[in-house]
Structure formats: structure tokens, C-alpha cells
Image 1 (cartoon, helix red, strand yellow):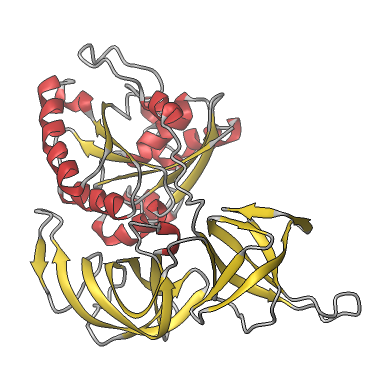
Image 2 (spheres, helix red, strand yellow):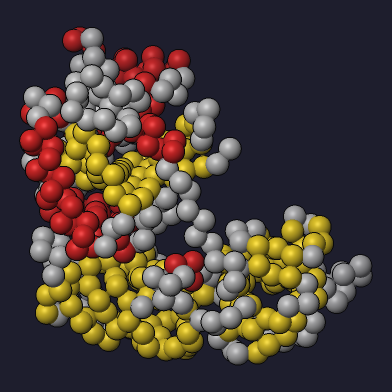
Amino acid sequence: MDLLRFITAGSVDDGKSTLIGRLLYDSKSILVDQLAALEQQSKNKAAGEIDLALLTDGLRAEREQGITIDVAYKYFSTAKRKFIIADAPGHIQYTRNMVTGASNANLIIILVDARNGVVEQTRRHSIIASLLNIPHVVVAINKMDLVDYSQDRYNNIVIDYAEVARTLGLKDVTYLPISALKGDNIVERSTSFPWYEGPSLLELLENTPLDIDTDLERGRLSVQYVIRPQTEELHDYRGYAGKITSGIYRKGDTVAVLPAGLTTRIKSIEVGGREVEEAFAPQSVVLQLEDDIDISRGDLLVTGPNPPKVEQEFQALLCWMDSKALVPGNKYIVQLGSFRVRGAVRDIEYKLDVNTLENLPSPGEAGLNDIVKATIRTASPLPFDAYNDLAANGGAILIDETSFVTVGALMLQ
């Protein structure tokens, strides 16, 4: 059975947590003890209603304020497919948490309050979906019960969002009218929308194709650990352990070691302690190479055509995640895979306006949740691919040198 990872996004109070709770509740994916605890904790239990948002809002601060702060993950399955749901916060203050949850999603559900239409956070989260190359977008127009299930209101929001999708280049966009609170069009098609002839949300999720985006031609493996037992039985053993992020590795293949630029051949491949003839993404493997050359944690073992760029200066789209502003000249640690190198932000070319989707002139610095295009220079060469070309080796993070906290997400250009 295949697995679909999806994330909910949208502005504050658009109903993301309630949507997930309704999806789990109506698909009978809640255990009896969970349901009993939910009924006891629900604020509306006197009225006979269950607060479904409590299923994902697990932090005390979330329940007290009625907002989502951190990303919550839920797991469920149907007869057709398994699912991992990431419930992302809608408040602008926690956009960085939303980026984390969206980084490996196959699909994003962007909720829009039918009363408010497309707002700033709708655009912001759509931009992030575009930057992260999330292949499928479902625009769920929620709270339709509060606008009397108006087809005109639904159509106007579809027209507004279609312009956003066109500007950002979002390809597979599906529109869906729902009421998460009432359960309309969540698991079953609702009779409240006689003018809507499409599938319910669960039907969409079950039938969305899983795009196989793994590149099988270009091999990328970042060394995580060098295995050197130095025992009597394995006196000369030297293995390089890591996860294959793209491509296929075969015994006898020529391998380039980057950033050093050395070449050798694969002597053996081990998967799960057994020697095999070939391995492919996303398997974790141990490679033995024919030549004893200097390879350490972070080095990239590359096979196939179109090798990565190896540069000390490059541009990246950067989502800033720290309350302390990013100022050109500040020094950070750049991490790509298991490769870490010191670097500095040289300049900021432009800032992306989330309202107009235009590139604004250089702001001089980047604040929390800003998306900017920046030039970065590292102390030593970094082997990378352009994110839009091969995301598996094109996404990096910036780490504060003093606190070792992640402060920025990079999409390398």
C-alpha cells in the first residue's frame, strides 16, 4: 500500500485543525480512548459537540489560545492508501514551522475562509508550496455553511486564487467547497452543494497520483559515517555509509568524490548487512571503494551524467526563520545533507512581496518569515544542484554559529 504525505496550510482560524479532526473522525480513524478523551476535553461538550481541533492541537498553549503553534503529525489509512498528515500553523509568526512540515509533502491543502477569501497568508503559503515544488495543490474553500453554501462566493474565490496559481506556476490545482465543522465534502460528498459535481476531500486524497520524482540517472549520496572496525576479521574494511537521495549505484560504477574531485570505482555495496549488486534511492547503504582515498563525513559520492556544481559563491532563495534580522555580512554554517561549511551572506538581491508576488528592491536586511534572494559565500566549495533541477541535493539550511539553531531555509539556484 502506497503512502501519501500531505500538509494543511492557510491563515489563522481557517479551520485546518478542525479539517484534520473531521477527516479522522468521519473516516473512523480515532481510537475509542482518544474519542473519550476528546469528548471530556471539548469546550462545546455541553452543546453536544466535539472540538475536533483538539486532536492535533496538543500543546497547552495551543488549546488555551485556540491556535496551532507547532506542526502536528497524524497517521491514518483507508483501504486504498496510507496517509501522513502535517497540521501546520497558520499564524505568520510560525511560518517557519510550516516550511518544516511542507518540506517533504506530496500534496498541500490550502484552506481559504469563504468569508475572507484569499488573504496574505494564503499567498505566503502558496509561495512556499511553489518554492518547495509540492506537486499537488488542493484549495479547500472552508466555512461554506457561513455563506449559505453560495456558489457565487465559491466561484469568486476560485477566480482570485487562479491568478495566484498562474503567477506562481502552480500546475495541478484542484478546488473544493467544504465545511470542516459540519463535515460537508470531507469524507462523503455533501448534498449541501447541488452545484458541485466533483469528489470529496478523501476521494481526492485517495486518488491523487504519487509522482515518482526520484532521479534515477544522477547518483547522489552524502557520506554520513565512515565505518572502520579495525578488528582482526575486518582489518582492512573501510565502508562509507549514507542514504542515496537520487540515482542508482552499481558494483563497478565510477564514482566522483566531491568537493575534492577524486574518482574511484565501487568495490561492493551493502544493504541491511547483505552484499548486493546495486542499490537505489531512497535506500541506506554502505559502499566500499577500490581506492584508499581521503573521504570523510559530508563528502558527496556522485555517479551518472550532469555532475553537481562545486562553487564557493552561489545564489539562493532564502526563507528567514529567526527573530533576529539577517544582515549581509553575518556568518553562519551552511548545511547540505551531512556536509557543513562556514559561510556568510554577501548581499540580498530582492525581497518577495507576498501580497503582489513582485520582487521588491533589496531591503538591506531580512526579517522573520521574509523570503529573499541572497548571495552566499562559503569558506570551501559546496557541491550542489539547483533546487528546481534536483531538489534532493539543492535544499540547504543556515545554522547560527553560536547557538546551532536553524535560522534559514535555502533553495539553491
